[in-house]
Amino acid sequence: MTAAIAVMAALSAVLAVCAAPASAAAGYDVERCGNTSGRVLLTLDDWSVEDPDRIVRAGDFLQGRGVRAAFFLVNNYAERYPRITAALRRQGHWVGNHSYSHPHLPALTENAAREEIRNGLRSTLLRPPFGDYGPRETALAAELGYRICTWTLDTRDWVKTGEQFPGPDVLRARVREAPAAVKRSGVVLGHLFTRFPDALPGIVDDLHGQGYRLCRNSGPTTENIRNPLDC
Ligand SMILES: [Zn+2]
Image 1 (cartoon, rainbow, N blue to C red):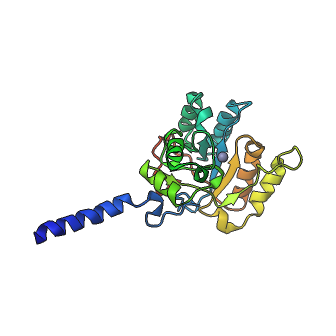
Image 2: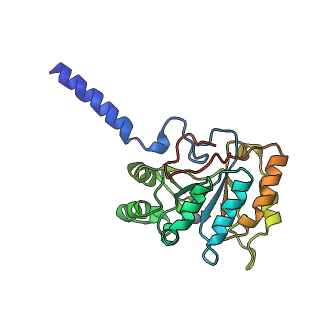
């Protein structure tokens, strides 16, 4: 009887560990997405509706500079262009889940939030739309096999002045002038529908000029993005 209780106690301890959200795993930093490398991870979100191949061109540029980035694609677009996800992974980039239709997950019912994640692009990293998540989303992500990944440096490329997104030089300066604490082992947020892709050459040059290293492109990736990140 005592032995059986001991076994049950041991089993429930194991289950408690397994049930803990992945993002609560020891040392996992949601804002750094498991980047402990010292290197900078560039991330590009959402989609480019007018010119989907712009996504592949951004990936191609970064591959040419030996850089591995992470693309978080909204799946109601990405699912119609499987060649784009395949091309990015072939180029050596990570492609992660950014939900199916980009809602504020905490505003949804639990079932609707679960379906948004489940129908997102299959991966092991989830970037919640708008960076909006709470304990419920962390638990749902873990249940579905994801770690939540936000960012340390928002370039605010998505904030328009009048009708205009900020230009490449403005975005480049924002990254250049950001403090070391958000760049070293950091995660930079930009978007595929803004001028951020146009700013990439300047951003990469500036980071190198400042002595930072970027996540290295070590060849094709899969949907399984490991923790810590292989930067
Ligand atoms: Zn987004």
